[in-house]
Image (cartoon, rainbow, N blue to C red; front, side, top):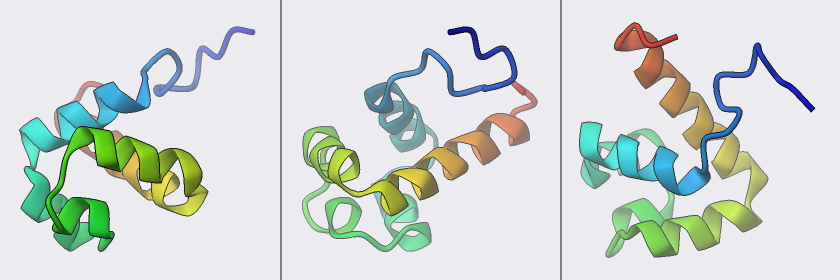
Length: 75
């Protein structure tokens, strides 16, 4: 099914995390979204595991990613 108005369509959660970490860093991400996988020995692997099981946290990460894209004028 096509989703032309969804900027997250086709972007994997791993790519979202990688882009956010490269742009903001784990420390800032952990400040904005206070979750253990960002604050205590952060890694993409541990964050993916947590975010796939926790819809409210995934929603916050996706929102942060959309704000980053908007600030970069990519959407």
